[in-house]
Length: 295
Image 1 (tube, rainbow, N blue to C red):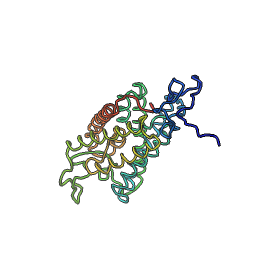
Image 2 (image 1 turned 180 degrees about the horizontal axis):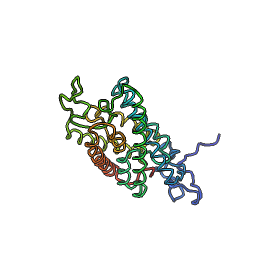
Image 3 (image 1 turned 90 degrees about the horizontal axis):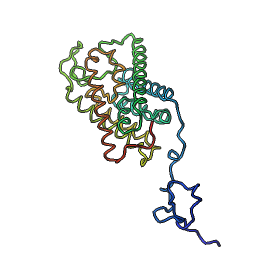
Image 4 (image 1 turned 90 degrees about the vertical axis):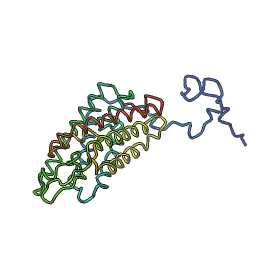
């Protein structure tokens, strides 16, 4: 019987064929023993496809459209049937499948705050970031028009009373108490609460996006973590301000709800602040600026 070979003592391949994980001397040392953890994943070893900026931006526009139409559409068309849990899952599950569909093309930002975070850590160039922002806004606006057109076809729909899933605080907070004739009897959560949750929850989302796609993470399940993070974020903050954490989502429907445009600035500025903080937290904890898959 042929004796069992010790992988640690096997000679290495020719230097021209040597991988980055193998030492330059002739024998593997104990630190380079072959085991399951020493193998790169398919995502790490596969050559990334090169896509033009036009295709990347198109993917971002389509992805943002799908996210806003599917998730905000659930709130507008089916909110009374599925409740806040159903709306939260609609956001999370939509982002989950988008990660696996357009992620390989553009990185699946579909959110200006995520793009800002990736820009800060050096995973996207400034020119590409601007292109992504434009594409995300366009995709969101088209989704908003589509949702409004469908909602308007229902005779019972009243834009002034029903709105279109926009974000807001005070009298426009989902927790505001309304009277039987439509007036606001008591304001909901105030501007301070909206600022805090938008900063904290957007920072959480961007941190999870960057962390789960880092080179030391199991990127194959990143979409699950990212999607369910967004779902939990909505469970927390739907009662407060209807949850933005995405300026493109807020802008998409603000034109169709009374009072929403006057409060829109908060849902652009503070998610971007949160996105920047999430990126800085990632860079500090992981000790690097570059993740696995730049976009």
